[in-house]
Length: 199
Image (cartoon, rainbow, N blue to C red; front, top):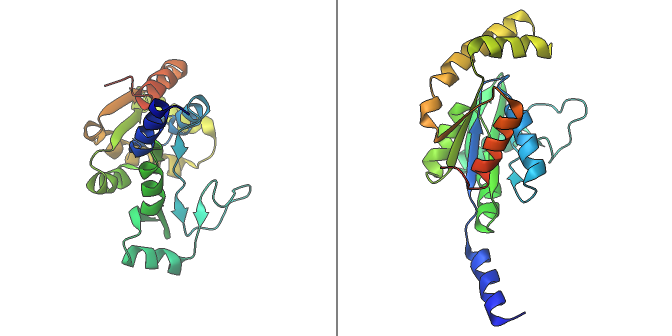
């Protein structure tokens, strides 16, 4: 390796990775966009959250979530190990600060898929994070998508719609807003942001 190539490699290793925080109401298409981005940008590290809830059928520890005990999670809270955390439906969910720091310090870009509450906590600790909000074109379309999924009872859909209205009110906190009215166009815009091509 030439001296110039070695210097460039060293500079790349010294460069800190970028942290991308993406949030969206249920049914806006965030999971689909994140999956597409991971396929198009294989260098992107997808942050895996930790949780105290029991694994669902087919979930893999370390891939879908890191499954931990409540005692382990609470110890992490006391020691400040979580970059963000929340208690949802009697279970804890959180993002390891060590996981984020290790990848960012190694120069790797990280995609963090979290709710608005978690995004606020992340921005307190990582103010340089780039934030992206995925929105459905309207609340009516969002309701149609939730109904079409067929995963939730009418009561759960109403709760998701109530939460979605509150989340939509927070979209101005995000640097980028991607309206998912055309999937291919939304993927292109999302990937462009993650690639550094959009400001």
